[in-house]
Length: 197
Length: 195
Image 1 (cartoon, chains in turn purple, brown):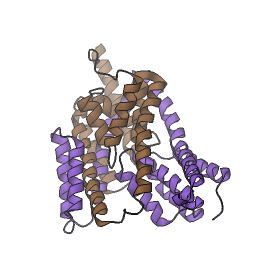
Image 2 (spheres, each protein chain N blue to C red):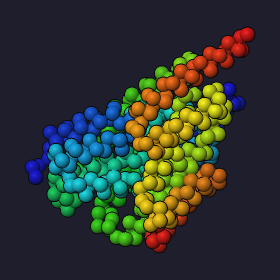
Image 3 (cartoon, each protein chain N blue to C red):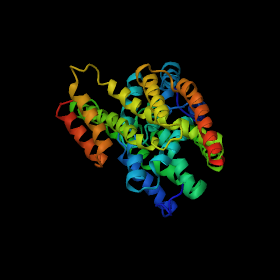
């Protein structure tokens, strides 16, 4: 693999910039395009590394968009020969994380910032009020649908009933009880370690 | 409708730490924590305000919770608040995820770790769905009426959850007529108020 430099960092940055404004519904919606570019076209990381990056960022605390940082880290470490390769590798990986996150966050954040400001300034306008009223039931249902889709990855009902029960009881607890979410997550992790789900 | 001096963050620094703290609790997604911290606990936002801001955060490109942090931060302290909330949302979790990337490289395939991840994944699916169900209360006062809200919610669920239609098409196909109806209801209300 050729040595990485400014050119590759800039390429990576521009790739994420180009996806940022397309990521309606979250950065996850552009995952297929990232996979095409990073894995298939540039061959900067393997299929398994790509999936692991997403799984890890999803399990870790924080916004799921952080998988982009893990991707940036991994491609740079691959190019530099791994974390054992020394300070240069770490510096390159750090720069790559920065370029990736800046690329994916900056354009959409800037647009959102000014759009939300405009909406706030014009919040009494009937069109703005109508927009917010109309979107309310849609985004509420969207959340329920997202949970539903995520639960669908548990697979067959008969085989993995435990996981479905865990999801359903978590939903009910959040809905009706004021219980700290970390307790529910810990219980889920424990159930997983015990092999119940 | 404004409440007399609702709770709000004391400073830009407080905003940064509030968002850091809630982001660090968000295993498998931050939304459920954002709702429970900002609405239930700190009461910086009412359920109605939360749904309104969430709608904007959702419809704009980019990570939803990142967008939401910008919107809420800007509301209280302008661009400094937006930056502080954004930095809070990303900085410490970024450090954590990188430490995990380096340290978990060897153990990610162990059955115990895989099991824990699977269990937490199942819970986080439930947390997101439960947060949605909890926010139904924000629809009670919606000027479009309960029936229309229920119909829109059910159609959205079917389109996204069951038919897996891309979000953009659902927003255009359901959002646009819903907006027209909401506009009609609002102007009818205004006329009624004048008459």
